[in-house]
Image (cartoon, rainbow, N blue to C red; front, side):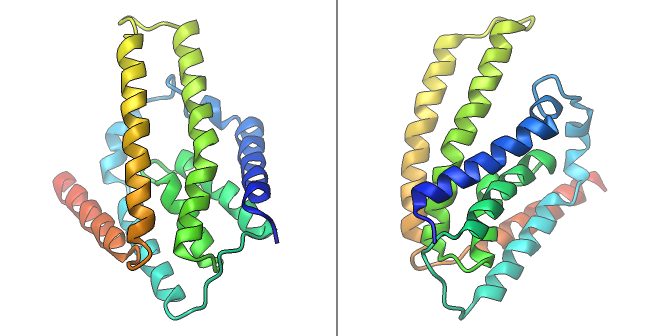
Length: 193
């Protein structure tokens, strides 16, 4: 068994190794081709993600779950973070929480671990984009004051949302999010057709 801190380090190292050596930071940076974004609404990611959420919730129903983070769980959570980079529309936190849940981690522990691992990952992505903006300014200058304000508001909002979510999952599961993603995916598909 690993402590939360050890699991955090293992997951972070797995993520950093893959991002560094797979050059995902280049593939998904601000310079990436935006043509795929226009086609995104036709992709099946929301529907598939919703079905995945429902399938995992169904699979763990009645199963005894633990709060312990093992080496396997730490590595899988690190790998799960990459899904959001590889498949647009995939939630980093949902992928990590649900894969930890599928491996037998209780919802509160999976959620806490996911958000703990997400902090340095998201900070690194933000720093990378900031460094890119400083080195290669775009045609419209960056309003750094608004960027800082947005970052602070986002951090405070995220703190309260995570706090609420951890309390909420003590008595609920993620099935409503699965149904929401399926409905959203179908609505997006209907808009295209």
